[in-house]
Image (cartoon, rainbow, N blue to C red; front, side, top):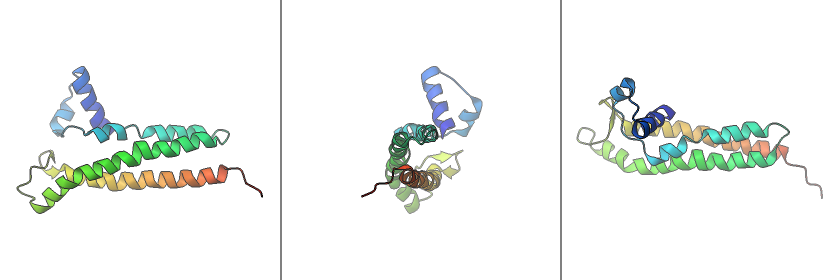
Length: 140
């Protein structure tokens, strides 16, 4: 994904051309893809929270994981649903963008969504439990 969005960004903003990416003939990136490419930020925040158990930084990483990881995937999931339904109803007659002219991109997107949502969901789950373990014990 980073290669696709990065090559498109370089191509449109700086006039960069690469024969490999031109041969792939991939459709233009959606806005949610640009936001999802920022999903490395929660990882950096989470790793920086390990030194001295910085609970506040881990909380920032938790919410950044939702904003940069889960939310763009959910927007993409909803945005691609009409295209998936159109392709499922009429596979030969649909005008769905394809990868290399053969495989429909909407199927690739839904495979990506299934994997990405699991990874981001587990990441949030484990961040929550780590934050609970790091939280000071409250005594009554």
